[in-house]
Image 1 (spheres, rainbow, N blue to C red):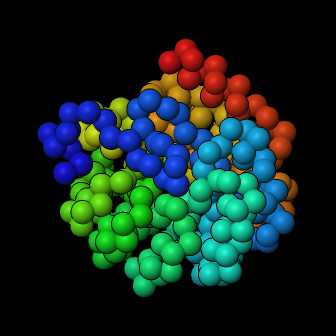
Image 2: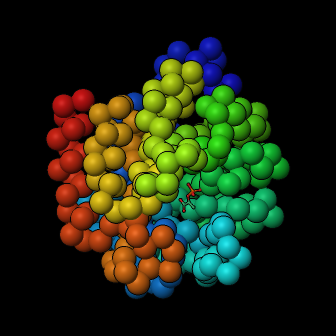
Length: 263
Ligand code: PEP
């Protein structure tokens, strides 16, 4: 269903009135985690000023340590809905457990399946059944074929509104958090009609690399990028070192616009 054999043209996924696909370049931005109403609204305003048309924000956070900040859960979903009403930005948020899919689908415009859950087949089927568009991140150790088969699980439930997201893979290199595999964008676009976006924030884990990698994603032909933004990165409860603050974010629109024009 998700392969080129099923469909010649590249598909466009609509999220709350915003299109993701071949004829546009979509910036998704916002805080790694929803912490407070004020922090989320400030991050959303920064994101919108940088050209974002979708707001990301973690309500249910999949953390490697059970002692990390794991999100405000239902309260965060309410905050995201308030910020959507205030800014007009449709909301993308992660769901980590199939038991929460209905709840998250009631509040969010797009459901994210994170790297750790890419092969959680029950969750994939549940988000497929939800009828909401899905942002499917590549598993950190998944091959491109496994990633596309994960998308097939969602599509096989009658939901083809799927956007693939390359977010870096595990390699031997510790200088970055993950190794951004830009060739995967091209390979996935060649094998599948689904849009493919890039998350340079979770790939690099370092804010100094985020804008250059976003530029590289544009040059490679990605359909969009997803970027962590925080009004005060030093105080972030989750992944502060990779979050862009106002200063770094100001470089982003030029980087994307110039390169999108050249591409
Ligand atoms: C995220 O986008 O908040 C996230 C946890 O990403 P990943 O699943 O890529 O680590």
